[in-house]
Amino acid sequence: MKDSDFDKWAASYDDGMKDDTTEFPFIGYYDVLSEIERLAGNPDRLKILDVGIGTGLLSYE
Image (tube, rainbow, N blue to C red; front, top):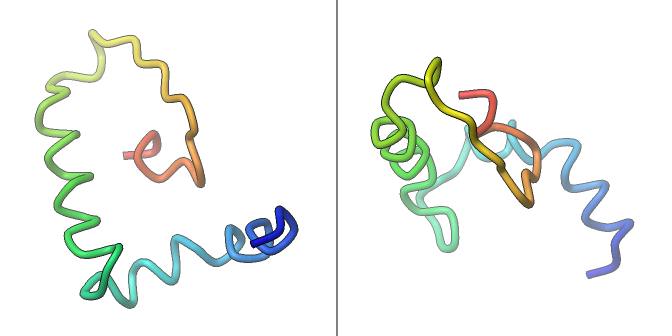
């Protein structure tokens, strides 16, 4: 995959994830996001450095 291919995919990645998280490698994608959010607790007291942020969906949550 070329970098430009990833850039094209990134534009629709989050919308695509809403449609299909039942196949590898995306099985349980939203479960993982929810668990990370639960483990983080109260975000008002946290400082988090998210390296490799991707589309930013986890940071948004």
